[in-house]
Image 1 (cartoon, rainbow, N blue to C red):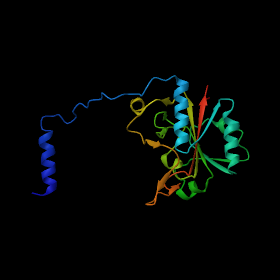
Image 2: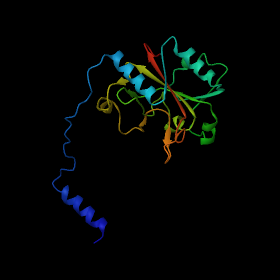
Image 3: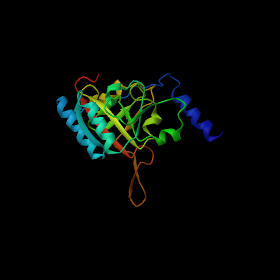
Image 4: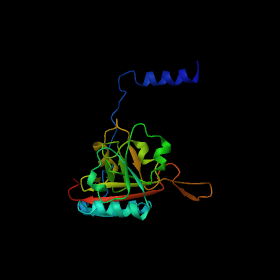
Length: 213
């Protein structure tokens, strides 16, 4: 009998009574402390900054000029957007050329754009994490991994939760979830930090309050 057969046999015996999905105790804290929505947004901003993301705050009237300024500061000539992104968000970004994500876009074409602007599914304050699920305002996973500059808009307070346990029930596990804590980075054996290895080198997060449309 092979090792594989022994392992599979043990699994069959362990699940023979039908208890293949045992109850998992979830008696841990769902959130650490009580916060107002404003305090939760402040904690998110602080933890995002700790991860070296650049954080900006604005409202519905200020989103278009802010995005135009952020793109202009990087000298962007092209920006990639997913389907469903509110068009007026980039209405002030002239002369930046707006490219819409296409299924047939190659990795080389995506790498050639100067940046990407998306929304998000959720943001988690205690961990400084942005969660993308491929929704209409976010697009496919690859458009947020290949371009070097990602601007992500988070609607406050609707898309902000305190903790991971609060986030999970609001996410669909069948969707392609991407969890982002700061710009892409890694360290070599000498602990030299290198950014932009497997994702954008620069992450800017816009906390948008008030009506988003």
